[in-house]
Length: 161
Picture 1 (tube, rainbow, N blue to C red):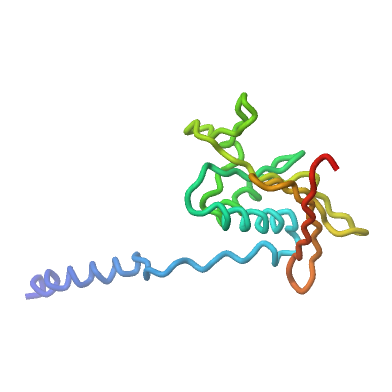
Picture 2: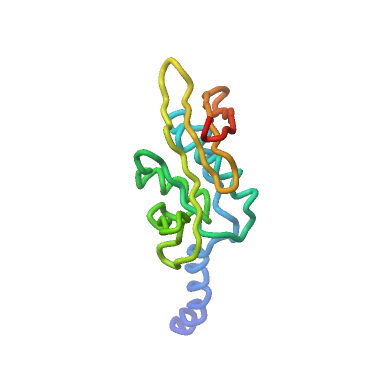
């Protein structure tokens, strides 16, 4: 008799145990915006620039990498960006080609880079840096942390100025 009860309850117990392993189907909560973190102005600027880029680029497109000059992004910085932008690839995946374009190191297909360079923060002045995005002129950004978030002022310029 006991054996029959256990055999009958087994599927119910198994289903209950599996229910704890199954997601409720909801999406994970969004990551907090990097612009709200006063200690990460560089990542806030990357987030700002990449958000605009991907909004214009649409769902399809080439491999895209985020690069920083003169020093590369740290692994932690790159991971923070990749977690927020699913179409973003690690920087070493975008390689310069002989013809001056970028190529995906894995597929050989065309790639693009979103680059921030000459970024600096000084006590006596706001943070500032340049951003280049495919299809747009270079833009010099100044950043100020106000009201709990980084604020961005962009000034597009022709490099020759």
